[in-house]
Image (tube, rainbow over all chains, first blue to last red; front, side, top):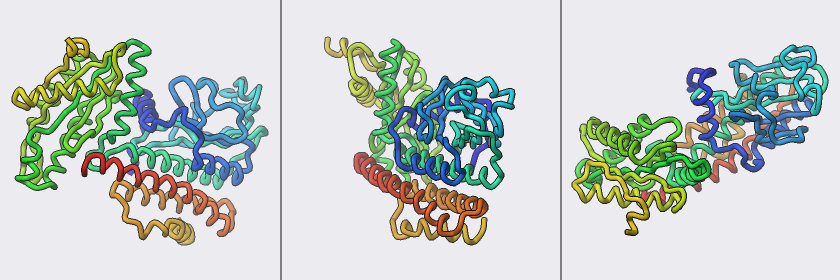
Length: 332
Length: 84
């Protein structure tokens, strides 16, 4: 079921777009087929799957357009995502919003436009599927209905890729998707000299949970803990299931001290959870935290340090948080 | 949605009926069938004949199915990596 449309939450919209991890990717057949069919059915010279990034529109697929992106402030699709309804411009030269637009007075000389917002299941308009003509024209309702149907198929394709990134039991990212995001965040942290921390969380005595209450109960515990972690993190953070009962948290713009405080709150939250296995059970977790050292290591090494801190927490009695030493201190 | 549109969509995705699908994908497939039926309705309403509509749906479904196969393989690999 679709959630309520969120038109004013720009940061949430950008995070929703980021989660699809589709910007600046190569051309893909499903999207190419969609724009080809739209072009044919609506008889337009130009058509695109446009995704609206913070400062640009980027085309995942395009027909009749020479560029792969434009500035956001000149894009018609920026207007399309601000409304729940299709945006239809019959004659851009006669529309005060667009008459002086460089894409109207110059190449590709847009005169007519129809754009359907690409709405995610959470209710964010991340872009639009648009049909463009170089002469004024109407887009009758049956054509808008066709365009709207193709727009839903664009979102289907994006969602399908998203499923591949998720762990089906917990709903957290898969290990592969988590590491891909961690590597990207590490690169960003290194480039802009920003803090980045990782935490590794492991359920204490999980084998005992399985042995005592059965594997179904263990699965419920995994699910509830993942839900607690995902509810606790910020939108810019990520949670991945990286082992059977082991999760990792990625926290951009976070020092080890702040990551430790967050991990401590999460540990306490999980300790207080009534997990309806059934029966109602309680579990605890141990957490290891490490801050990425951009100059000295790869993010995989940070994860290994967080993992060592986790085992230090286990060794110290479980149900606690431990912070990793830096690589240098480890070596000393 | 017309019966014709629903029938065309159901016929298009029929090859998936015999495949054991991970639960995570079942909802996606149902959604896709609904969206294909919507597309069929819209194309018929736009004056396309049934053969053209069926061909368009087949084109759309063909690429979805290829991606679906890749996702199933990936989910299995990820599950195997977790020892599930």
